[in-house]
Amino acid sequence: MPGGLALLGMVLVQFAVLLAFLLASQKMIELAKGSTSLARLSFHEQLVFGWRVIWRFLLLFLLAVGGANFAGVDKFLAAQLWFGFDGIAFPWRQGLLQLWVAAISTIAFMFVVEKGQDREPRFISVFKEIGRHWRHLLWALLFISALLVVATFVQGRIAGILAPIFDRPEVGRARYLAYVALVLVFSYIRLWGIVAILTHALRASYRRRSQMPEAA
Image (tube, rainbow, N blue to C red; front, side, top):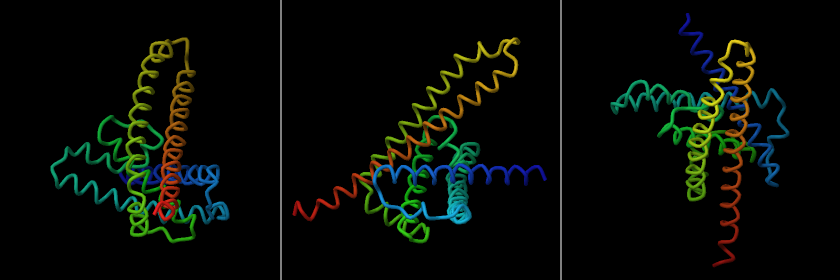
C-alpha cells in the first residue's frame, strides 16, 4: 500500500508540474506574439490535455528506465529518469540528468505548440516538428541544461549559506518558510527560464524558415 501511494504521489506531482509548464508555455507564446488556441480551452479541457500528455511521458520514462537498466546504468541513477518533470521545477543532481530534464521540457513544449495549432498530441507529430526545427532546439536544449546546472548550483550555495542562520533554535518554524520560499523562487526561475528559451528558439527557427525562400 505505501508503495502504491508513493507511485500515485509521483504521478500527481509530475502532472501538477506538467500543468504549470503548459500554462507558462501558453502565456510565453502569447507574450511573444505567437498564435495558440490553448487560451480557448476550459479548465476541464486543459486537464484532459494534460492527462493525454502525461501518460505518454510516463510510458517514455518507463522505457528510459528499462533501457538504462538493460545498459547497466546504476539503478539509482536509472530510477531518477522517472522524474523527468520534477527537474523543471525542483533541483536535481548535477550531471547528465540535467540534459534529460532539458530534453523532456523541449518535447513537452512542442506538445503545447502542437495543441496550440489544434493538432492532437502525439509523439510522432511532435518529433516531426522537432526535426523541422532541430538546429535551434538543439541550442535551446544546451542553454536549458546550462540554466539548470547554474540554478541548482546557486540554490545549493544559498541554502548552504542560510543553513547556519536558520538552524538556530530561536529561529523556530521560520526556517521552513525560508526554505519553501527559496524552493519556490528557484522553481519560478527554472520554469519561466526554460519556457523563455524554448519560445525564443522556436520563434527564431520560424523566422529563419520564412526568410529562406526570399534568400533563394
